[in-house]
Length: 613
Image 1 (tube, rainbow, N blue to C red):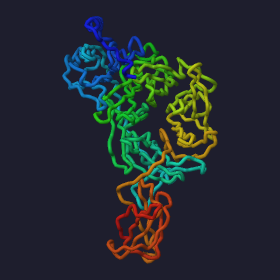
Image 2 (image 1 turned 180 degrees about the vertical axis):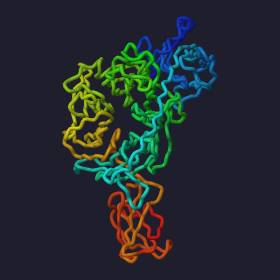
Image 3 (image 1 turned 30 degrees about the vertical axis):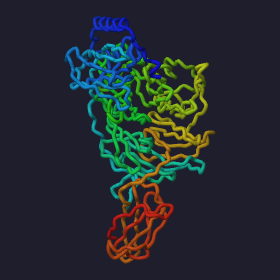
Image 4 (image 1 turned 90 degrees about the vertical axis):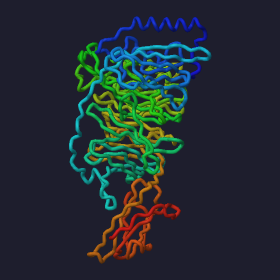
């Protein structure tokens, strides 16, 4: 696809024309007013005219971070030369050109930041065959709208129904899950969540089919997590999730975490260009890159939208980051492509403290065919993009849909738009707040390429009805079922393809979770099992041993070892695993005890330390 977009400059006359165009553009260019945040013409291509380069920041854009790198995608580092950046106020910026590990581009990384409001001119040379072609363009650095940090409110201790506690892991206070519907027809796999907003600790959490805790990683107070899921990294299954700070304005400032199947950290992914990763989406690709969302509040004159002239707007961004180098290969910004007036959120009551969140990107789905599908909550629309150029090819829903919406196909405040292998689109349609639909639902949509009509193929609603004002996801499972996380309503449901409810569960108290998934998972923690023991009748009766192993999925049974000392232990009993923690009684008082975890074949896969009972 990239080769088809390359325009070779193969004559001296063409090179001369390119040079004259650059000089003319520079002469005509004037720094814009400080309050401006959108270009005069929207939806420009990221491909620099006359070159093979897809660049960011885009030419003549106004959103750039002061810490931005200059991303040049579409030519090898060796074909790029003499790349320079100069600010209209700060002058020439020294820097280095760093190549992407994929070999298809490079970023010029300035040694010092630019200044807010200044115009930056980028120049360089691109080798194309036997010719060397000059290029140049401009962008403007935004004035950041720095939001005040709001410390999290002190939360009271979780109630007994809201959280669960364990003898063998006394420091672990985990969210509780109540399973209210279950069927042997449901798909295999565990439930992946990241409960937050509860009175107990927050953190990435795995439950089994029966609602038993499998793994919980409690985070410090004030740190939240979202979007726990299983992805592939270097050909192996890994756990990924976002964690960080969630300001009252409803986005994330943090980083993306990657753990292996032993729950050991093998990496963390940060946003580039001076930003922090947002909570809404994170995708690992098969080419050694990651896609992540960013929310960037910047100052903006909003008087044309009925807002303050000295206001602020939140730019919806996604980046593709090279995992090996951390460089930003591409950056897409809503302010360059989608009008402010397409929002269903009003600008009238916004301020620099509460910026105009006109777009609110919440999912990214990059396809092998050269397109990317994104969802924007506050425009009620999905956008099909040309992945290379960044241009919007189709708008599905919202105020200026290019697709005709069939009966029931309009979404409102939707989340998690995903293209399925058969070309259909799954999406979670919140429908509130304010109320647009009587209840939230998961949809399967089909767009006819001839008639450009969006048709509802399937709709899944919760019995009884739920109306989720935020968050949520719709996961199409390999067996044809649909797994739905209901977002602000702390329910998780699985439906058959015919709409039969096969599984239903909910968190307790004030807990909620941004998304919920079902995945097959094998966890093999490297730390040993943990135990506790108590002996009845004043130390003379039977000993009860409590055994657990946070994150383990392979233990089928426990064997209890006991003896007069920690080094003299023999088997005295055991029993099948019974949930996260298993209680096992021994025949009599035992001075010292330990446990062995046995897999389904009876092999020992873990041994706890011996403790005095």
